[in-house]
Structure formats: C-alpha cells, structure tokens
Image (cartoon, rainbow, N blue to C red; front, side):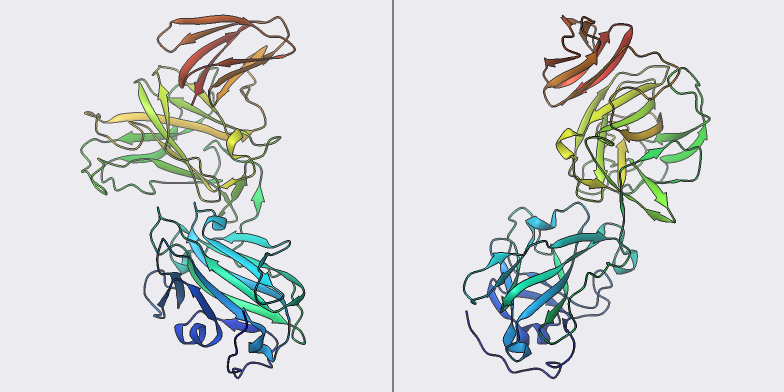
Length: 429
C-alpha cells in the first residue's frame, strides 16, 4: 500500500515522535478501517494530554506509519505506548505489524510488552502498556491496529504515543518504561510487619471497616500475633449497578512504596493459601487485581468454625500471568443482600507457594490434598487410605493412593478429605 505525504519539519531529526494529536496523526498516518476518536484536551479523563481510540467495537482502526515521512528511509525500530485497565490483556486490544512491501504485514519478532503503573496519569486502575522492539531490515511500514471487542466499551485502549527509529537516525535501543513494576514470584502477607497495603477498593461503605488487630484465637493453624479484621455492616446503602452493597478488601504487597507485580509459576507460586476465622457460614468472593491474571468472580462456599481454617486455591489455569492485589469479599460473593447483622471475618497469612500442603510447622503432615477444576488431588505415601466427605458430612467414597498421587473426579463444591492422619478442606470449581 503506497501513499505519499508531505515531509514534516522533523524529517531529519534523530527519531520521529507522534503524541497522537489529531492534526499530527491525520497528517502523518494512513488510517485504515474504522474512524479514529481523538481527545486533544489537556485535563479531560485521565489527566493525559492526548490520545486516540478506535471508533467502534465492531470495526478495528489501524494507523500506518510509512517511510515516506523520513525521505524514504527504512524503519529500524519503534516504541508504542497505550493506556488500558490493568486487568486487560493488551494482545486482545492492540496489534503491531510490519511490512517490507507495503502490502503484506507480519508480526513483530521479539517484541517486548511491559506494563507500568502511573497514578499521575489517571488512577490505580489504569496501566501504561509499552510495546517496543527492533525491526528487520527493509521495513517500509509499521501498522498499529486497535482491535474490535464487541463486549467492551469503545474507550479501550487509549493510544497515547508513537516513537519510530529509522535508517540514519539514532539506532533503536531498549528503553525501560517509567514506573515499571518488576515481576517477582513471592507473595506473602501476614500483617506482622508493614510490607502490605490494604484498602476497600471498589467499595463505598460508610460503616463497614477493615483494620489490623491482635489475633483473637491463637491455635495450631494460626498462632500469629496480628490479623486483619473485616466487619461488614448491612446498614451501608446499595450503590453501583443496583447490585446491593459491594464490599471487599484488596491486599497488596509493598516494595519501596510501590505495589509489586507477582507472577504465578508452576514451581514457586501455583497455590494461593490464606487463613480465615469466621463463625458463620458464607460464600466468599475472590479475585486477583492488576497484572494479566483473569482469576475473577470466584465463589468459595465456606462452613464457619470457632477456629482458624486454611483455604488453598490451585491457580494452575493462570500460570505465567501476574497480579498486583488479592481481593477478598467475606459474604455472598461481593454483596450484602442476605446480611442482616454486622458480621466479622478475620483474614491472615495470605501467600502463594509451589506446594498445596499447609505451611504450618506445628502440624505433622503425612499427606496433602488440594483441588482444582473438576478434581480432588491427593499426594502422599503409596497405600495411604483416603476418605472424602461432602461439607454436610456425607461419605463420598474411600480411595487408596497409588504411586504417590491420587486424582478423584468431583463436581464443584467444598469437600473434607481425610488422608492418613491429615484432614483437609478443599474446593473444587
């Protein structure tokens, strides 16, 4: 696809930068597909000076940068910056390709995609996406396409900046995005030190509270000194989407005053553990926030007790993704429709590990049990007898571990698994 543009005054500068102002884009880009929606204001929306969006959820909008802008010099590298909500996968919303013949487009080899979080450019829900890389020899065009997503609003994503390197200019080199969150594989919050952040993000609750307090029940499961106390008050009014009172707590891990991005891995961080103390039955709501993990809208049946209980969730389906915060709602998933009195839940020892077994040193474990999608998993010595019960106490069967492991198909729900001298509560989803 050949086209010719007037050469702008920066044609002989070291690199080309387009801040996605409407006048600059329409002068220097060929726009293909849907029309573009521009915002050139300096204080509108997310305090971002300018950005451009696709015009329709049904029609992708592409921006083609051609070497005619640079006196017919081939392109050697690029940096593209977009703004998207943290829980979106950028690959579903934007695509960058190159062409050597102005007709056929190819995926970018070894493109680096990174997320950074900048509260100045909006709020904590948004992430800066930086896509960059060197281009093969002979590249004449790069094409940036904002993809169609019928189930999302038109404002995703906000395309904010393009920088292009070309022959004879400054060679492309990797540029570290600002406010870049380094990925780690450990996440552990026990409320004993100041390494955590807690807030009622997504909640508008005048009288419900969260606070760190002394452990009211020190037992073999949880003997720590400090725990998080969550009091959910039903007198808080309904709000947002008329879905009753949305309530929960987001727990993050702090490092140098910034929340860290934790990666879920097979070896070091596949299993999410946390301790709960709550006397009444409930249906917990759980999500991960930030990063690329899409563990959302999960419901966990819970039977109350006067003692601490440990819950283990298998994140097998999310290995390789990242999260910033663990979000926990103590009743009826995220609302208070069925809450008539103020209810108290204690939360503690939130961590991920490579093992489904409890990390409690005081308990001797001869076998471990955990659950995932449609399956109860048990590990232990060959020949160990395993009994499975429903949460109501109904006997669901007796099994024997062979070759160190056992898998038992099960419908979604909460089960009690007795393996040897170890009793575990596991959730199948």
